[in-house]
Length: 160
Image 1: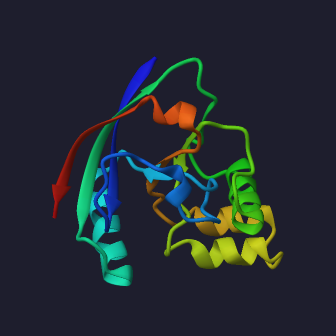
Image 2: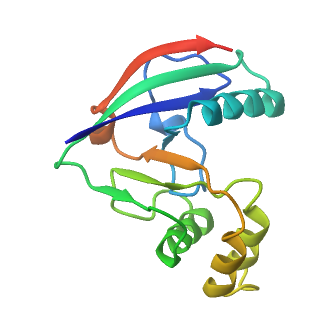
């Protein structure tokens, strides 16, 4: 068992996490996305608010308890398996895996050109991983099931 401090940046206020409101075709599938990096979540809150407007720029702080009853996957870095799970979830949508929680690098605006070239078959897995090696990968922790949500405890919401 281990405890993670997680952060979520948002343009809306909420008291309860609702996975059904999550966007489709995300890196690890439909789910609730957080990070272990506070500054990254603050950046996400500002970016989402600038793009879509909303109720403000909010930083949520959570504690998440990882226990043996959860199907937990962690990618320690960029890999072929990481690329494949992103491909499956971005192309097919929904959740294309059996994990309750996934932790790994973010395929963000800086890396999306390379990811897109991999998804459309222009780059091989090896070529994409070579190109991605030059980017500093950010961190994300995604929660995909109601079971995993029971391990997530909101500590506070801060308006930025």
